[in-house]
Image (tube, rainbow, N blue to C red; front, side, top):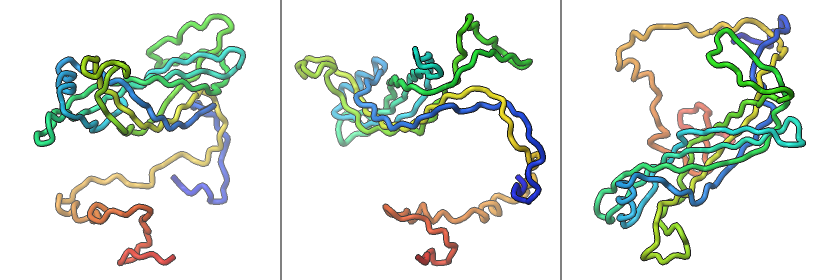
Length: 248
């Protein structure tokens, strides 16, 4: 984009349709003792193993249920159901390679956020779905979104479903503890008046890559951090000196 601080000021005020975030929250969840569902074959492999280790976990889906909060206009409860895929290594003993299995787990989270009020329906020429019937006096629901980073498996173990049962005869399952960071937002489509400076024209020119693979490789910076990782508390100085030493 061009320089917006060129002294010319904005050209005009324009109205745009966009999603306005009315409320949001961030959270750090430690999801303890989630039961992992496995296929019969994988479950037998895990239960017969001497020990297990969880390799990784990923969020595969998140479904939402939004309801208005009684006597609190504009506030909504957002129920989010996460589904996880958990990759587990089952070891028959310490000397043999593990057998990798994949299970699933779910977790339900509820938050209350302000989502504003609205009772309008929007129709567009490129709509593929028809807005649902609301009924008289019903407010439209805001849109809920959640952003997550890949979770971390903190613990994985096989244990009795009933902690008080006899370990020799109890029904056992796999349980995991997951750490996850998330941001939940409620937003609505609104028309906003914003200052317009100019149309956005890219300053970078398109060019075809005519270099040979070796010429292209020569232009890649040497990945020094891959060979010499920074220690705890150290930062990349970025001073541009040859010896990498920064003056304090």
